[in-house]
Image (cartoon, rainbow, N blue to C red; front, side, top):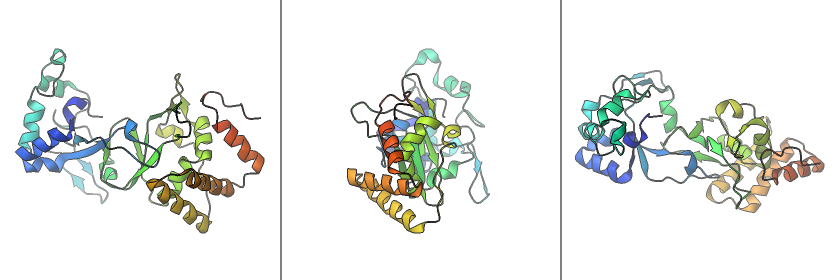
Length: 271
């Protein structure tokens, strides 16, 4: 959360302009994804960027990283001081809006502290804070993706760092069992959207197995799905997870009938 997205989240054109004015600006401008950019096994980067004037943090090696000094980035400071981004002057002048926002660090130019800053540079599983089952494509749910690029996210998008078998976890969350589990573990909004916050996802049970051959089969299929999730690939992934849970054919039919229901609140239709 920046507290002022219109100032800190910029277009590619503005990013290029700032870098042209001062090449050093590129050091603190990072690509950013939002929840609505996350698809099944992929994401749709919309060429928007975060001015990452972070407030300092401790990196993954335990070293303290100092807060960004805005004076080292004159082009970025000029932009933040300007009225160009201030589309609603009735809310106050630019610097007043910078200095009065709650999500700030040691100076009005800094973002608030964030302990997991380095995680954005790591391979990560990503998902939107709120997901809905699309009426025109009921199979496009759940929508978990994977990103191995340095990419930040805003508050509408969550990330998880899975150091062991991330493709195995990703495949499960996108599987038929994953869909069935989400309908029972997460909060459901009045409009039928699923609220996938951390506290809810922690209650989803992942398969635990020492069957390395099956894990490898799943991960190979998930790697294929990252390039092209065909119905055949999707079905093979589902079947491998059914096998890991030792589900009977009757249990599989129960899950798949339940998953065919669009209404998220109707959780007891399969008989």
